[in-house]
Amino acid sequence: MRKLRLVTFVLLGSLLFAACSGGKKGSTEKPVVTIAMVNWIECIANTNLAKAVLEERGYEVKLVTADVAPVFAAVARGNADLFMEVWEPVTHQPYMEKFGDQVEHIGTVFEDGRIGLVVPTYVTVNSIDELAAEKDKFSGKIIGISPGAGMMGLTEQAINDYDLGLELVASSEAGMLASLKKAYDKEEWIVVTGWKPHTKFARYDLKILDDPKGIFGGAETLSTIATKGWAEKNPKLATFFKNFKMNDELLGSLMVAVEENPGQESEVATKWYHEHKELVDSWFEE
Image (cartoon, rainbow, N blue to C red; front, side, top):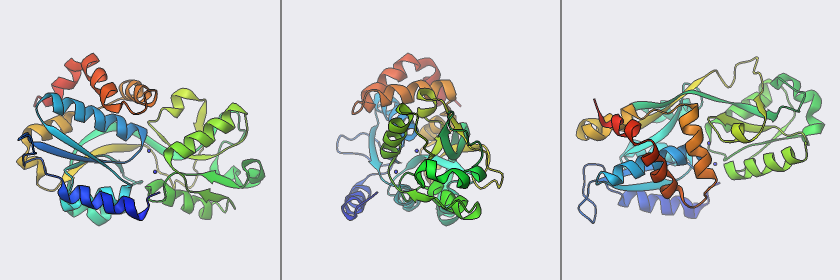
């Protein structure tokens, strides 16, 4: 769970301002729900699952993908109804400080999120404060994700506070994963910005480095936020998103299925829903 060009923001703005809220009707006279998301595997998985479920219940669901900052702004301004991946209390704290009075918490999707710097287990470094002494083995770089991601700012702080002398290279989730796989296949040393839940922990033997200074914090929750007042206007939907909860096993299986079928996120999410229909349908119950 990342680089936007000007045209992306223009298109995003056009899409968001044209989007209908959950209380309005779309062109097909169905109630519309607009969900903003970031291009992170766990967010893609959860958001497409919500889309699949709601569409089968007669809603029109619009997905708008962007970087973190415009996503928060969109929900705060009411141009998108929901965002299902707010990392708290550390990662997205700056965004909640800025937009918190314009949004409302709906529910907690995942209880045990973790962020930090990640290396393969064959790398003998176990703590962030050991990286500086081995920086040449890492080619002097930490491979990051998109510049707007909260953990990129925390990684810059870690580089400074630990005096690592490493360069943080902005990339994307896909770019980071490609770099990780290439290095892992050759058993080369690499350090990346990483988070859990994520399929990379199922595919590779990895470890999150100890963080003696506590810059990345401990366990975090992944929560859903909505435009302030949205839940009161949409009580049935609010109940669903309040009860939408995933654990390592459930989310892991969904993420792997999505990752293994690029371009078929909706179909994969629908199939997963029908395989777990009793559980998912119970999320609509008070």
